[in-house]
Image 1: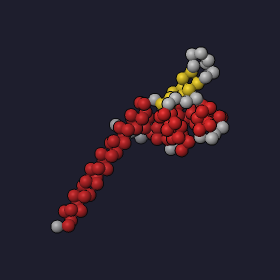
Image 2: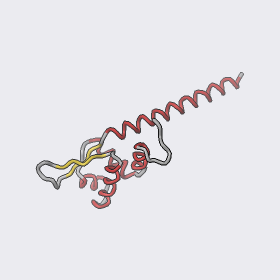
Image 3: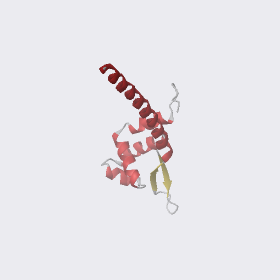
Image 4: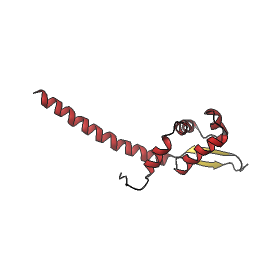
Length: 115
């Protein structure tokens, strides 16, 4: 995965959205099941307008999607979208591999220095 300088990648947008604790909590709640905005507001003890702003950020970066009820268009629920999390996981695996290699090389150096 290549991150382009000067352009916001999906991983950048995901990390930016998840940098805020309330949005991370919303993601945790949505892991359990889809929720209505009012349920999320109550769960995090936040006003509906404030929750709406957080949901807008999560929606714009693609982490969640809005679904409307077929019976009542006013009823909305939010659910997680797996794709951005797969991209983030892939990026984290790349970083983990890098650090595993670096720590392995350091360990080898320390062992060689003992002789």
